[in-house]
Length: 466
Ligand SMILES: Cc1ncc(COP(=O)(O)O)c(C=O)c1O
Image (cartoon, rainbow, N blue to C red; front, top):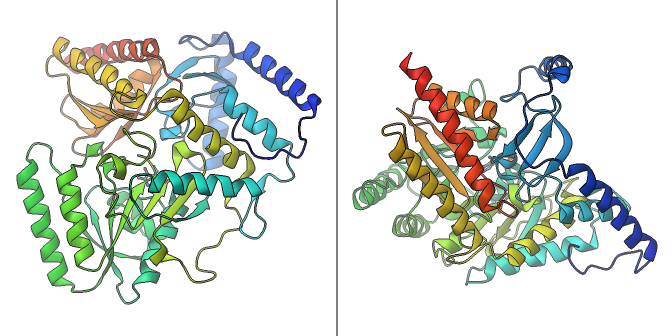
C-alpha cells in the first residue's frame, strides 16, 4: 500500500477485509489475460459500431481501434472486441505499472474512501505534502537545488508553469531557445514551442522560438561544435532577448534522439552564461533512465533551473530553484491533481525503489539491454529491414526500412494486428518506438514482444516486395 500516510479509518479491520476481497475479485477476473488473443468474431460488429460512434463524437477516428474493457493484467490488455494486446506503449509512457496493477488499485480504493475526487490549490490534501517532499528529495539527491514544486494535471500544464516561471524571472526577454524536433505539448504557447508545423496550423504566434540542431550521435564533436556556433549566432542576433533554453535530454516525440553529457552540458552552460533559464522537459524521460531524472543520468544537477515531469509519475509537476519562486497568483489551478493520482504517484515512487529500477544494471537498463539486443538480432536476421536501436533505458525505438512515415505507420499497424502495441515517433526518419511498462514487464514478455514484432516485420517485408 502506498506510503505511510495517516488514513482516516485508522486500522479499521473492515477496510483491510474489503481491500482483500476487492483485490481477490480483481485478480480472479484478470487471470486469464496472459497472452495475445484474437478478436471474438461475435463481438466485432458491435465494437466497430462503438468505434464509429466515438469517431463521430470526437470529430475524428482513433489512431488504433482501441477501446479497452477495463480488464488488464500487467502488459496485457483486453479490448472491447475481446482481443488481448501486449501493451508496449503504455498510454505513451503513462502506465508504467501496466494494467490491473494491485498496488495502484489499492491506491485507488483508498482514494475512493477519501472526501473528494480532485485536489486543488485552495483546498489541498495533506498527502500532497508527502508527494511534494518525495519529489523534491529525489530531484535534489545528487546536488540539484530544486527545492520547490508545483503539481499539475498534465505535462502541458507543468510545462506552461515552467515557461511562466522563466518569463516571470527575467521580464523583458520574450524569446526562447529550443531544439529542432522538440515536443513540449499542445497549448497555444506550447504549440509554438513544439517544432512541428502541423501542430500549429492556423494558431496565433504566441511565442518566438529560435531552434538549434540536436545532438547527432554519428558526429558527436561536429554536431556539438555546430550547435554551439548556432547558439552564438542566435544570442548575437537577439542579445538579451531569450528567457530560457528548453531542453528534452532525450527527444521523445522527436524520434528517441538521445543527448550526450558533453553536448548538453556545454549548451546549457553557454545558455546560462547568456542569462537564460535552463529548463529540462522530463515529461517523457522521468523514471526511464538509470536515475529518476534524466538530468541526473547525464550529471547535469548543477545546471538545472526548472524541470517538469509527467506520464509515469501519474501526477505531473514543475520543480524549480528558489530563485524562481513565483509571485502570488502566477501559478494556481483549480485542479492540481486527483486524489488517486497523488496516492498513485507515491506508489510509483515506492515501486521504483522496490524493484530496483535505477543504477547501472538496474531494471531499466536491463530491460533496455534485453529489448535492444533482440532488435539487433532482428536487424541481422533481416538485413536492411531495420536500423537502431535508438533510445535509452525504458525508451526504445527502431527505424524500419527507409524511415518514411508511411512505412513506420504500417509497421505499427501490423504490430497491432499481431497483438503488440508500439507507436511512431519522429519525422525523417520516422521510428517505431516502445515504452514498455517498466515496473512490471518480465523478460519473457519482452521476448514475446520481439517475436510479435518479427511477425509484423515479415509481413511488412512481404508487402514491400509486391
Ligand atoms: C517531452 C514531453 N513534454 C510534454 C508533453 C505533454 O504532456 P501531456 O500530453 O501530458 O500534456 C509530452 C507528451 O507526450 C512530452 O513527451
